[in-house]
Image (cartoon, rainbow, N blue to C red):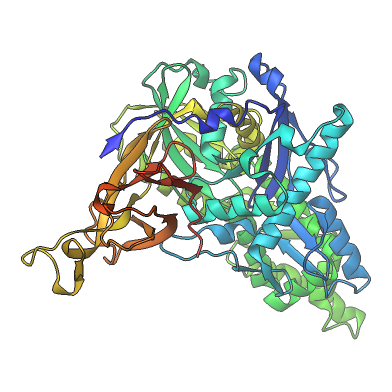
Length: 603
């Protein structure tokens, strides 16, 4: 039984806030952004995004690498981002790195299926094989970004406090509830106030940003603007990041709001997969051992090499590029040739052999190495993109295949990988009848959109429920319908145990301001508390909580009042799905005593 009520909790959060800040711990790159509430109230888009600078590149970026260097105590963050790369290289050069923990691209470890366990004790493995609890690494990363942003705010505004800020943490839409909650716990351990934390889904944040900015979200060939789409128009959001591909379909709702139309889907074949293919190429040519030596002992050269590849990856345009030139580190040549340097003659022969080694990899025979340059023909370089682009197109076809032909007004491409020209070209070619929009700042669209979302969460009017949710209940036992092993006797009759009491069905649309309620009755007179186990399933109509596809995702405990008539003291359980997290409330009818929580979902 579902009833509609007003849910004011989200809107109330901003009443006493002065700023909205967004933190994006990305799979490849991370960053922060903020804006003042007063600017947002006046519909100004004065969103400040931090510019980051690297020792290994000559340009600034809107995000910094997701790298965390933690001191030997396993507790204290030494540095983060570009600075962590520089510091780790420095430690390596002095042979002082072995007791430090260096984590890179660790966010994808939280991508699991809903029935796979996540807990606060799960471990992450660093670059040298050492482990730390994941929550320590994530909380340290959030702490750094929050502290860095707060320091910037302090320079601009006097007497600023943490409590003056609403903190928005972004997560992929394809993440499970457990992964989202682990990010919330990480933010709490980082010192952010509990009542100031909002979790934003990355495709939704990007959608909000591009809906509000005409100039940045327009298809220049057709003139289609996301902000000018009529109510009822649908568009596909492709959030292509470094680690994940997030896909969802949104529909324009009245009052400039947005509805989710289908369950979010995606994969972990983001832009990092292109980098992985490049590294596989080098490992195949030079051997795993030699390449790992290069990474370990010539870290600065390795960072330069991968930084340059990242730039080439985004700018590569096979339509007007004959070849791609990159610097080939002398140190990598030296490591490869280290076994045979007894004579100048043998060294020359080995130098020739490195070209042969690169050409034997299956990427073609036209790769040229000349002094410190490596040149790839365009048709060879494009092979690095194969798996990532193919998986992205395959996932898009799967999503669009379930929609009516002509029902999608445009495709919105956001995320760092969406800045890749080749990916843009392939998407436009594969879906030639649908206008494709790539905002000017695709890599920071999520970050800036999260600021706008944090100011106005109800802008997402409806979402599609990803799983079927309910609680473990009981019903009158019927011998012809129920398994005998589930029969149990209570003070009020014979019951069937482990009934999946459904509150909402997978695929249902839930509005921002609705709650789903059911009443439950206590089964024993002397019961003084009740534990309500919360379940999820990918099935639309699970029968029992013990069915193969049902999994417990949380629990809530409520103390009961002393009463002579416990059957007239029902418990009302409410599921609130309007936000990005699920809130479950249990309330005792007689006393009004209630317990309400953002469900943990962690084991």
